[in-house]
Length: 506
Image 1 (tube, helix red, strand yellow):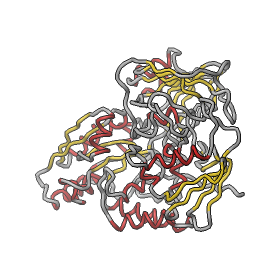
Image 2 (cartoon, helix red, strand yellow):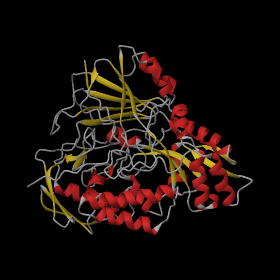
Image 3 (cartoon, helix red, strand yellow):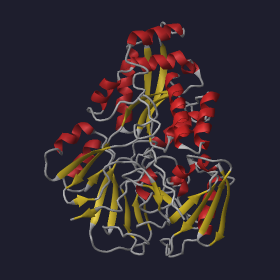
Image 4 (tube, one colour):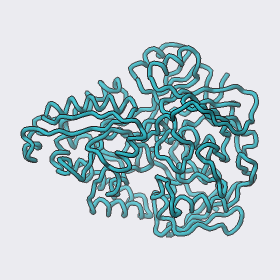
């Protein structure tokens, strides 16, 4: 049986840079399990804490940062270095010639953390649960293409799609494809996965602790314990690193503070790649932003080079669309809307706003978002657009903006795989509706050859950019600080996971 390998757009950023859940209230502790001995503890400092541990019910990257690949696994995963889909719980798979049927063979000897054996029925139940009646899984649309899921025997899973889909295998390499034990309960407090680490305890408001799974089917974790410690203040996070409390600071939220670590032999500063696009979202369906000329004016009003220098200390890459350079259908669209305040003013006048207008921007907590919001507001003021910045916590952002699309503008980094396709979904919070774009997306997704897929996605990206469905402020780098003696943390962030499965500590 030949294994199918697909190169992934590395867009699952593996950081709290995008759609991230916010910290929980209270200081209660949840504990389960034990395990692992020797080889020490690695402590990773992060910015935003999950509100729950249920990967299947909460949007945001904070949960998969801790649990994806460390605790939970799927049939396949995304390779952190190459961006390819590779085997995980499935040892191999094949796709039918027409692209509508996948047959997966499960690995032998895989058990859940509670000791129960993994079977094909667990996969069937997990996949069906995503789209079952009453499902609250925020990513269930990624499974709607699935027609049937069957287990012809205990080690084989057959998935039949209603049509060919270039995206489906990409999607199940992420959180929507995690395999749970059949009839699993208490997912919000007692994760039970198959990964190299077991969940141990959650000190709400402070940290989550994982311990090594010594019964893991594959390569064992190199440290006995992994602690994810949450510190919401960037200065405090850096101070904790300097004082020896942390081994890794992931997802740097204050790049201007990196200088204190550079040149210090105790630390290594990592600047890797991501595919996390910082998006200035605009509600395309209501008010002034329903007029393409207003959206185009906003794009012309922003000096993206100055933004990157001012907001993120020169780190980051200018982009002109929702397609990162790592995607095979990438085209350089940074020249579509050059900084031109005079052109912006003319477009606003043409749209009937010669005397200006007022918009509200709902901004979640990440540092890049709030700093970018201040810069953008200043730039828009110069062309006659007054922006009222409304800072919101992550749960409110997820409800008000992502859930209800009750907003004018917002800023957030997006890390989902192939998130360009969201512009082909009019119900998504951008509320961008163009049937021609939706058609191009469908043609790209159902294409059986890469050339057709790439051509259609590139055509869609061009239209989306020209219609200024959003503005793409910059592409985030993966900035992290690692203490000397700590090895194995991925340089590039191509998944949502803070993957510590290969981290070692001297």
